[in-house]
Image (tube, rainbow, N blue to C red; front, side, top):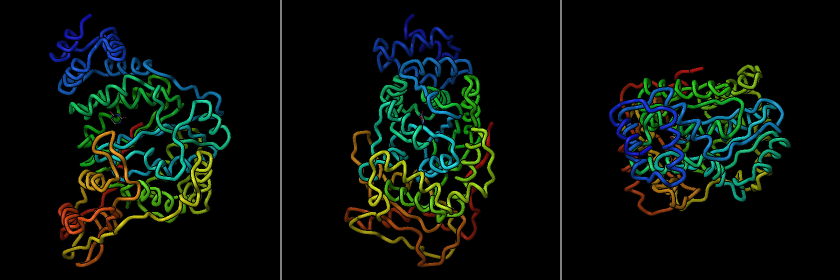
Length: 425
Ligand code: URA
């Protein structure tokens, strides 16, 4: 077989067979198919797509290119969760301990942020001492002992995705359904959970810009998971504006703590409780939203989170301290009205430039910086009222407020946005 023939076949819009796909992935991981051919292949997929069968062959071959976690030593149904990426997305930080507080074990591997999106692992690492590296044995032991663990994705997991994702990132081939579906599902299948909740984000700050594409991606991934015996449900969620009130690593930890104490914004709290209900259902545990909510207000979910922080070396006092920055700038409304748009991508990039995110993988992070919004889309503001605060460690204050304001749209009327748009099961 030759890579050029496979690329040409895909370029011409034909479906590849199992052997061709397996040969290509195997060769890429072995280094016999070079980056330049793999990037031509990724671009051909971008334009011509893949059939369900091709995506399934690609996913299962990718799973085999690394370690496959065996979580069978942990009793019960293990449920995993994955988001296709967002801005201000602190859902995992709350959802994992909330679900674990009902006795459902959660053994989760998470990733780092890049560009406008944040990553759970970076947020956890902003807690002094928190260790995100664990051997498979330590990871399993912690879940057996306290019911939850969130660690960084093992280097040994789906080597094909590690290589291919980095290549896609620099060849403008990330945002295509077959490659996102195979990337996400190969990792979820290899990570070993029995059931999977997928959060497929849609909107300006997500890879999927419209609901039809989000539905297609969700359906593709749900079918892939179910076909290999992993009960899979997807929720399509809004990413037209940042999630919740904060963007930034420690700022998001603090918001997650507020939600865990039952003191978070009502809409985000409701949203996370709904996701928790689905995750619990995947583990055959039926709970009402009220019962789930109660685990926030009575401290049970927070206690689970703190248990995990301690088990992974984190400092509990440091966990609750406010952020330390050189300055906090206030952004106020220029006129009365309703917030009509807070584009997630723009604010994700704004936070990235403050140091909260990475433009390239090797960039260091400033854990303390970021944004806290007082107002979200659909909410009224009066002239001079505060819309947001910018937490920063640099001096270009005026420039920052002006730049920030360019992205805040205030109109006479605007609708609020619902977090969960659709559930695909
Ligand atoms: N998240 C992933 O893990 N992979 C993708 O391709 C896109 C988002």
